[in-house]
Length: 81
Image (cartoon, rainbow, N blue to C red; front, side):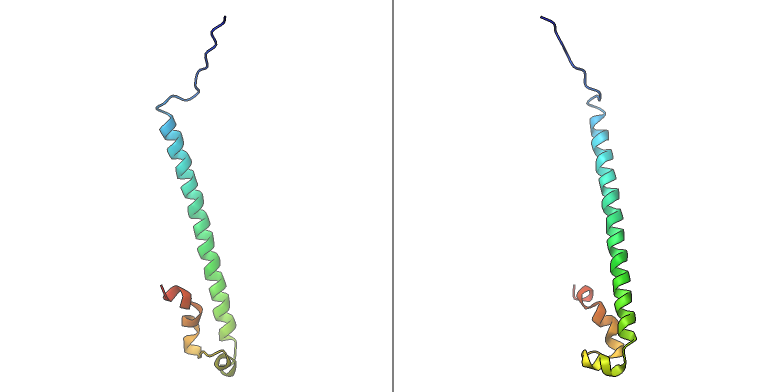
């Protein structure tokens, strides 16, 4: 009977490097998504601030806020933490 043996392509010393490289790449991708999410949040909040600032004082009063409270109102969820 023929003896067939398979050789691994990577040595055991290369495996930790491959795993750490993969994890580093995943960390970089996660960081990029985090930056994208934060930038989208900033854009949305800036848009909301501009929209509220464009309202008249009477319209703001109907919403229960004053012009001085616009930024606090938009960032209320963030400031609560």
